[in-house]
Length: 119
Image: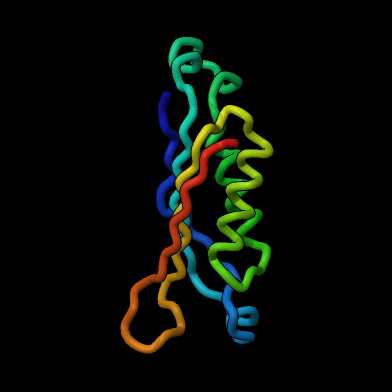
């Protein structure tokens, strides 16, 4: 077993419950970790024998571009797509952060984290 991690994927997206958030958008970061078997690719040195992190990043960016009211909702979509499109992934840990959220006080970021296992 092994893990592939994409750290601090940066995106400008339009998530949030407030109408203004859908119009002006905000900065977000995403941290993604997938568990998979890396033994075969470690020997073969072949992209076909591993999980392509370019595809993982593409899925994150495409789903972050679709507006959601809740970070949990966009995170669920990302997890669902990864499991659907990449059978080799057995577990996903995903954190989605809204930078400088529009709330009272000086808050750097709000983060939700989800962990899911393949059924």
